Image (cartoon, rainbow over the protein chains, first blue to last red):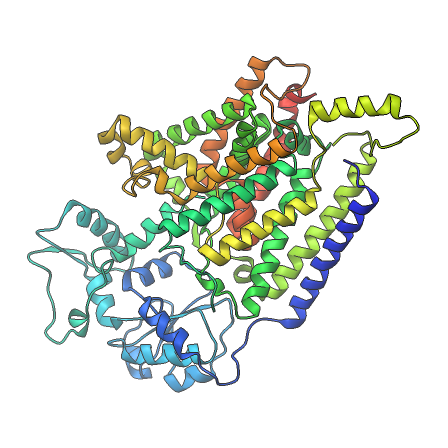
Length: 219
Length: 198
Length: 190
């Protein structure tokens, strides 16, 4: 079908519209924070939908796979950071966070000892209009128990064993030592992560569940 | 932000499936309108005769990309909740090449083969049957292919990430490229012979 | 080129009518239909938070078939098992979407008078050969789409619109390979 005169006019209109929208996009730039106003509803919804945090296993997979734009931020004091920090992590205090330069294509994951300061930092960054920010809910404790020393209970189901095999590989990548132990695994008396209610998809292979979800997305 | 209305992870409930049907009908209708249910027309792309495939694809991509940018920019769409297929460099590069060979041999892609079959073409049905066999063969061979299949993962990797540019710039560049390609396509088709028919 | 000349109607009109009867009405503009498809894709993003697809539906159906015929074998193969346990293919989003594609394609063809059986091919091959190429091409596409985790709908359109690097890589290699392999199959079409 050779373009008739009305056909070409339509085509020119479409092309023109595309050009205008594209140039407009360049002019409009990206979304920036609406000067100080915080959408509390949206933030509350994000928390309830569990879209505010990542598990230690998920973070470990992101670090190992060199997820582009990933910025792991340790919000503890400098002395603690110097003593030990997660691979690829940088050190920023909470007050430093409020001024930090973060690009829209970056994904920030905050962590602290137990997770509280990281959660607060999450709120500050979201209030700044930065969207791709998460925190490690169980903090370094979760990293230790889920990544460095993941433990397979003796009464584990075959599905749990399969998950554990994958997590164990991740653990070894970070120099960890997976353990196969009795009962439901060692819990430190002062381990706040142990007291946190677990999501249905937590612990018993959150990382693998995430991988599973990704695999299942046919196209 | 009100969009997306249904989260991709939540969505295979009844409402989600209803949406799937409606979207599918619109998709199939548009594909047939463009003539992509015809293997000869589709294959014509690769013999330089009929560049419909290119024009349809790029028009669709540009429309959706501009839509995503603007809905997001106006605070209507939370783009971070839209599922982006993860990048696996090697499997996608190799898989693409394999797919391309099959595409020019069959003259139809998975979606358009269904359109062709729906209009009664037996070659459409043959492609559908072949595809079912193909995915089964892949599944049987999976133990051998698993490590390749999972190799070179890059997670969610978009051009804004990769080139360290803003989505606005990347989208505008995409539009510029598409407009350039359509202008080129029109000129090519005019030179390649204005003989009638599509 | 419209054939609505009144002067030479006596000669041109029957020929035009014959062409319409044989081929149906001329196809619509690729740009307009492309924009239409883009809007459908955008609607998918906005309503479902995901894009369109096709090859995944084939995986679902094939897996269901294997699951029905050889359940133990299916359960043991992760590439099959991942599609099971969701309540069957009729609860799979992509399968329902493809069902829609079939309906929509049929409707469009019916309205345009383009319904008709037969085998689309060039003059130099027979039906059998064309069907063999079609089936073979389908097998190869099935494998390629699995490797790439999608096809022209899922990777090229969806991933392309979302500016995913892997998807654009797929587009590039698919088109390059198709152009490279085209001479092998020229006989099918011309």
